[in-house]
Each structure stands twice: as structure tokens, then as C-alpha cells.
Length: 297
Image (tube, rainbow, N blue to C red):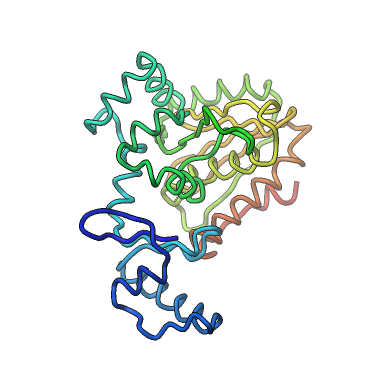
């Protein structure tokens, strides 16, 4: 499914219908699947490259979706991820009143978003809620904090909300929390992005990817809500498996990885796979990443 803009309203449409409505392709033969798929693939890749619309051809689960009106998607994301001290929307005031402001405060302080609050922030998009939630999860804008059998009171983690000040004071504060979390006995390794910089948003995507993988594969009774701090994160991987991630200066392109000594052999392969998947899906394997310290331990 994709989205097409018509008369300033967004409504779901298949890619084929969207292209026909735009009068772009006229010789699509539904009976020739191979030829049609190749034609559509080439066309979508071209339109995405010239910013005619957005198509996530390399992201599993989103290959059949295109955003004809990208500003609509940008607005939708900005209702969740922004500097809340500088930017306020009218819809925020109704969201602030939920549970006496408890859900709003929880979101800003912990990055944990309750579904009831999400619905207030996405007013007017009721028919697209399921699509948008699935879309945000697949793009790693947010991660699910619920299992497949949970229908009500779902929660999501939005790592990008916290931001990364990367201050010396923040480092010291994070290390204090890390020491307590891993009980002062941990193994340290690192992910190095060659070229001397950390791509914007990659750290947040890595956090969301790891959390999504864990919560999808395990029951929630075996997990704890992750902690997203100013200069790093603390992620529970189930059982006694604990992980800490701390990006260093953006210009050095390093994310430090902390695990307990007795569990690093279980955790580090998950981190390596998550980084490789993100590189493949969002960067077309163009990032040069050194994970030797994670792979040779």
C-alpha cells in the first residue's frame, strides 16, 4: 500500500492505482508479473532519486509503499519527535490533559509513548493509525514495547526524542548509571564508522532495532523498559543480559558498547547483526563500519 495526495486529503491506494492516477504509466500489464515488477521497481527507484515521492525500496515490509505527499509524513513524525520546549502544536494541549498530564510527562522524561497519548498526537489520522505505527516501527523511529498478544494499552519507545547533547557532564552521569546497571563489572567494545563521523540518526535506529528484535522474540514478563538517557542507553536483552550503548563525539564516529563479562558472547552478535541490517536497509551498505572488537571477542 502507498499514499497518494488528492484534493489535500490522504487516502490509501495501491502503488499501481497511484501511478495510474498520476498518469505516469499506461502500459502496465497485470498478467506479466515479472515485467511489471521490473518496470515498477525501476520507476519507483527513479522517482525516489529525484525526490518526486518517497519509496523505501530496501526496507523489508515497505517495498510496496510509496509516499506521494512526503510533507504529510514529515508532519506526522514531527508530532512525536521534536524539541518540545521550542515547538508546540495545538493538539498538544489535549494530549497534556490525559491522566492529569501523567502520560505526557512520562513521554518527555522516559521516551515511552502510551498508545492513548499517540492517538491524541495523531488527531485526524484514525484511519491511518495502523499503517503509521507499522511504518514508524519499520523505519526505527520507534520500537514496540509489547508482545504480539497485547492489543490494549500498547507502549512504544521513541529514542530520538531524548537527543544527544554529548556533554562531558552527560558522559559522567551516564557512566554512573552504567556502573550501577552492569554492577561495575563489564566488558567494553566499540563500533567505529570510518570517515570520522557518526551518521545522524543511526544511533537512535540501532537502539530501536535492538529493542524491537528483543520484544518481538521474548515475552514482556522477561523484559524491563529500556532507559534512554542524554548520553546513552541501557537495554535489557532478557534474563540477565544487559547492554549499554554510548555514542561518543559525533565527529569521531564511535559508539561504545558495554556488556557484562559473562554475557557478552550472547549479546554482541545481536548488535553486529543490527548494525549490518541498518547499513543494508537504509544506507545500501555504503557505510564503512569496523566492528572487529565485537566480532573477535
